[in-house]
Amino acid sequence: MKAILGKLRRKTALIIILLLAVAAISVFVIHPLIYVKPQADLQRTLGLYTGHHSDTLNIAGSTTVLPISLAMAPVFHGVTGVNVQVSAGGSGLGYANVIDRISPIGAVSRTPKSIEINSAAANGVNLTLHPIALDAICIIWNIPGMAQGDLKLTKEQVANIYSGVYTRWNQVDQSLPPVTIWVVGREPNSGTREDFEKLFGVSKTAVNQEVTNNQDMVFSITSTSYSIGYCSFAYIKGVNTAEIAGVNGTYYPPTRETIRDKDYPAWRELYYVTNGVPFKGSLIDMYINFVLSPTGQSIVELAGYVSIV
Image (cartoon, rainbow, N blue to C red; front, side, top):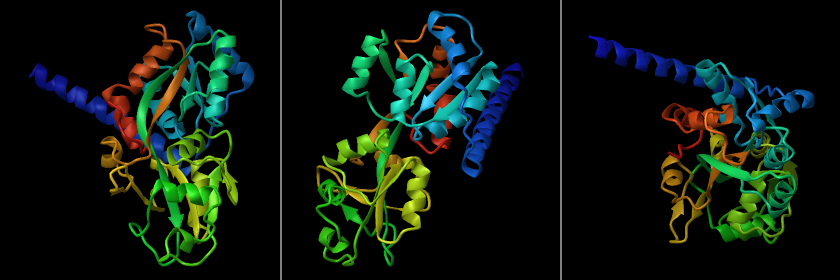
């Protein structure tokens, strides 16, 4: 009887945790209010680097990782009593805040640039990446009269669109309309933009419009005919995605299965970054271990991404 009661308590606890995560994600989708902690308050958390106690963690950076952080925060608080303050601003900000010791954890969707590595070294900071989820750069589009599954592209075709070689859809494929392509990209500080350019071989970007986050990208594409853009996997609901050719010539749509199996040719990892390996038992260590736990990875999936463990 005691064993049965124990199992029921564990199941009940897991259900409560998952419900909290769903509620957090719902709040993010319905009303994406980001609380940006004042600089002075952020500085007070620097005790985490010297082992001093603090009951607040601050995470700044990638808008792509933002849904994970927002969904994780209330559940982690419910389990540990630790507050997690989240702010966005791009992967560049995530690295900069860790390098400048403003935030103990940075949320990033790309590996560090050489300039960031050098800046960190100059400040005595050792940038350490912690993979937390799998994601994909998804090519999204809006061509009237065409539906999901109708557009298949190679990486070279995508690169030609974004470098200005192709300016009309029928240059991409003669079966497509002879209409000008409206090309939408991300802002220079975006980790998603950097990964997109690297994964698709875009050396020079020529776009008609730049947006600052995934949500604005999806809105721009769905509201603009004959447009093309790119976004993170968690944001593709309600917008058409292109199938992308792999090295074997097979076209793969971005799905949980193709990302998990790494068949979709533009998959990537998402990270938290810290200054070195966190002290065992510190709040940073507790938080990252929680994110990588079965419960944390369930929240990653609920946030729209793919579990990494």
